[in-house]
Length: 413
Image 1 (cartoon, one colour):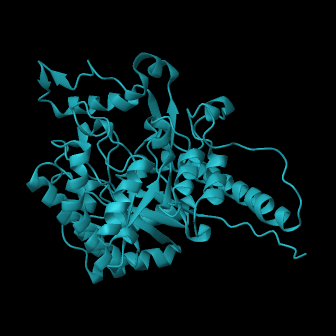
Image 2 (tube, one colour):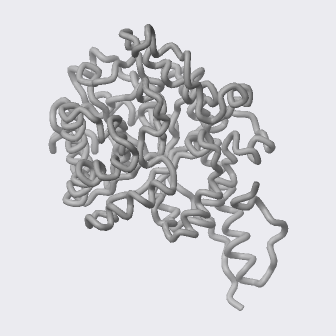
Image 3 (tube, rainbow, N blue to C red):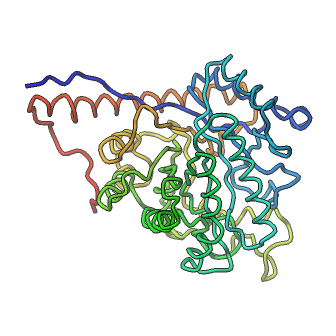
């Protein structure tokens, strides 16, 4: 009998730079864009992570969505008002080398299927700049959304996906990149009644979209950047999602993770259910969408009336909530990923995404211990899951020793 040695494999820890979007004052970074990256790299080294997920976004002066209408402010840490070039890339590489950090991927979260053709072109042109920056930085993936055309049904959006999103994937393929889609449904993106405003919001949709990609020869470019907070928002649990992907033969689809939770407010669910607040939110006045952009943020009551984002480690340990899928069971999340998905664990990134509203302070010294605590929690949870997996799925089976108990099971009701 061959003895299998105990060899746990850990994932890489990263942090999305939108966690502190104004680390470098605007008057400094606008004049010297890459200063924002340098200072974030230095901050990330203090946080003791291995990588950063570098956030890109349209500059506030160029965005079609006013900052006051956003639930979670974005960060243009990577400023692409001017195209990224070799000189800029060398400057960033120098900072990364100095602090012994890497970049997990570049992130640009926007609606790639916007119904206004001019707005959509602006977003696509910017995404191509993100692709080009990724190549110069030696990064193999970009993370973002698909989005939704608000003038079309979901089935019509599949045709729009083929016409307008697949060309982006062809551009990614030409550059040797993978596009990882985060699955947030983005219910507050519009003052309308649609809840699902990002086509790739759930595994059934991921598979439908991937089949379209395969037909177009870009199946390898379409992957999912899984975020368990959105599963909680829709009443799903991670283990069942991963089991479903495996059952359907799509256990390869997930290529990275956002480590962000969601805590369900049982009172809010009692009032409105999982569809969120559908009327009298305040984003409409006088029978039409408000003229005040700040009021449009109230469209997010479709989500926030029943849930609040969790920075990993900030929600109390609550086994009953785990069983009810009302908060993330982080340990089982990491176990299920190893047990059910086709992952290269050592090269898989866990990206801490900080969107817990009360802790979104824009003061580096105040935020630093909060992020350090969350990062440490994430690292230890992953290490614990890695040890359990190595012992229970590798060491014990090699010697014919049974594992005790059942553990959490998929599809339980």
